[in-house]
Length: 88
Image (cartoon, rainbow, N blue to C red; front, side, top):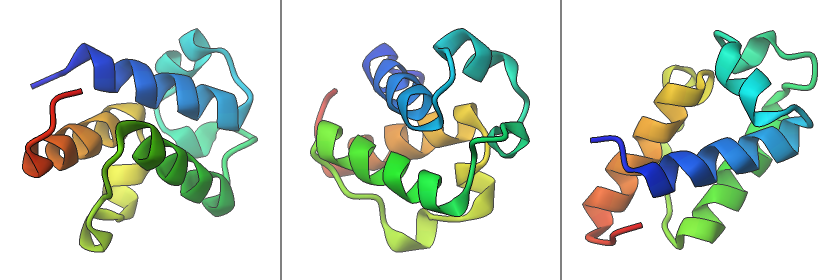
């Protein structure tokens, strides 16, 4: 499942926090390859997405595998929203 609304929110917020164009963000392999990426920035990204989508990611899901690529970050929030019974 690839909900366009969730992908749009995750891409926009991630690009804003990392100060890159959304197209550049989609072109990079791993977010960790970006010079503006840091553990503090990923926390900000997750918190802002949670706030906008009005959901909360389970702490056990906050792993490097889920947080270092745009596609896995989108999938994380798709699972989280689906599990909460909300539609984005």
